[in-house]
Image (cartoon, rainbow, N blue to C red; front, side):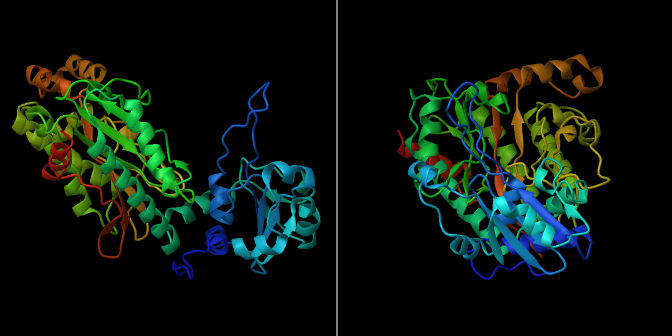
Length: 453
């Protein structure tokens, strides 16, 4: 199956339906999916911000609420079911495109209103209707429905990105990477984390993104030791601190996920520089190694070995490199996986295909993917090192781990908090394509920060 897309401006909904049907392994039946609806806060008329169901978006390209879609496998017919907007509703939400206009805009073979779902689907006389487990279709209950097979088929389809998806993700990375560099240029001692978060969001929205791909993290100093720190409300008043910014915009429902860590002052302190250099070496080693037919688990283990060597040289770790790696000692400093699949969702689906099991070991237990890398898969590569008091206390309490850690040296580096560097890559036939171009070399970062002072 070709993954190229004829037009970069038209969402390839039908190609995604065809790819998903192929994964089902059947020659007939109907795929039926339903989009999300607006949800209102309890005892209020205020709506929650609407984000489309990710699987529905993948199969339709529709971001508005109240839609549905179907694909008749035998006849290769894609059908869009449009939410009807009454004249009264149009006063509030605007006049929608006609059925014909929406059919053309979304690339479907037919378009009907949602009130006609039952009659249109019944007329196809499907032996089986394939639906997602969390979707409901009361108007189709008289027909034979399978809600088990489709979820795996659509997840596996989403793992492999076509040309349209890759280019949207590349643009999302360009927008978000530029916003990261703007924060590096504009941050000053005395500002609040919230100011940087607000600036980032404003920048990505002004350049075409619809929303943050996830809750942005702006963490100065010790706050960076909390992996998913989202308070983003502390004053940045110590020039010796670093600022960790993990943030990305979502463009046409496709995520970017970028992390940069940089000094609040004009340059890295010696301790911050030491840890940053190790994390950068970890990331470069993994990106250089990523390519087709390699195991994602091995990339995590490679990052740990590079980290172990660097921490040994600093005196934070001690003993045999092989023993440190075998005991997963680095997992006490990098308590997360090396990265994850990325696409419509930041932590995208398909990381653990059927039969893949998690390994219950420090760091590895939180690895979000365990599978062979193949062309057109998109991953984040996000090594990090952190000084988390609670985890280090666990390490100190375990003699087999504590013998490899010099806690006096750890105390010297505690103020670093944490460092993470994160890029987004796509696996190619010969290696990988790094979509993230934001600066990360120490010299480049310090050149930017020097101009800010």
